[in-house]
Length: 184
Length: 135
Length: 128
Length: 93
Image 1 (tube, helix red, strand yellow):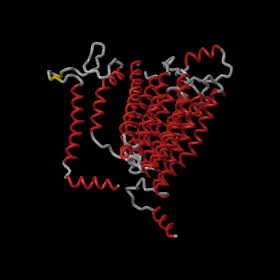
Image 2: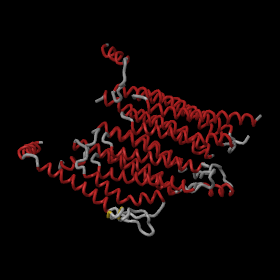
Image 3: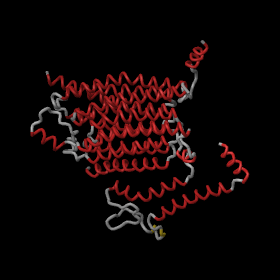
């Protein structure tokens, strides 16, 4: 039968997931005003987490700081400076996330299921069952190395395409561009 | 019923750690200075919440929730204090996080006006273009 | 007699809280399904007044009747009534300011539009 | 005169609030325009204030009421800031 404590933990879990989505969107968003609004949403969800963790004095201090003043100050800053954020140069960044995620995947799964796991854990060990098997139906994938190679391949591919695109620009356009930049 | 509670609390911890990871990525990888400030505030807030989570305790009984660390009676008797000690959440991290939040606000305000100054001098808040102009 | 009053207070409080919860759900579903920002304002008012003001009054009544710790139930009831009156004052003002700003700055466009009376009023105003 | 039946009724009203909050946050995250997300955060926080008060009755710890009052006030301030930002960007600039 559902008790009051399971309900509270359920509220905490849902608040955590909503704050996760809000943070991800805040970082990925290019339009800074939307990013500020998402950070305000994320701060409200954190207030609820503070409340559920029985810290009313912290919540009392945290609300004016995070829901009140941060958006106001940063909106003021955005009004004075630029509103949108320049987009990322190379697309290699996404595959770096791939590497980051495969490195921490075992730990994150371990955190959820409560089993112990190591960072950069390649294959399941005796005391740490979380891990990717060495082979899948006798096709060797050697644990997480497969995913590392995949992300590395993507990063290198995007890097090289960038280089070849730059090399393929005709000479006079580049010269005019450089001389153009010199006058700037 | 208990492992459901453990799983839900683990989801909260998992999302807090993931928040910290994402905001760290935001601080390093995103070019706009304003985005870096927003990511920094999120990272310091996550650290504060993690400090408070450390102070949390298991429920005395499924119906009786832990109470906030505030003794509401004016001159508490020993029995009051005993009951309080058995139910209350740990007050120490709360005291530390209280100052951390306020100082975080002061640091962010300072950063905001630094970025404003950078914009006035260089005409852009994009870190890559600022690096090019040798100023 | 004392028992009866507490019983009635608690019953009313619970009724209001449950109605508030359902109105809250309706408000949030309305917020999701309505086509553009200006129509969503209606759903927001349902969600705010029926979903926040009413359960707060219900919570106040319930706390007044619920003899948990004699002195503190009036503290809870007073806090709930103060929050309820604040929300009654602040909710409409906030959404009105937001609606005015988003109309004038065209941040939200009233897309499925048949006739925009406000546009004519503003044009007449500018002519004067 | 035991408060038990009423408390269980309120207890079962809590998940309804939870689904309402997730739907609000879906609109806040999805909202195409800025006023949409601000409106969703606005009405979500007012309902959170009510939810906090009811939860503090369930938790039987009355010190937690003050959070609701402060939350209701400061979310209104967020509303006004964003409205002022939207308005002045159009008129002032």
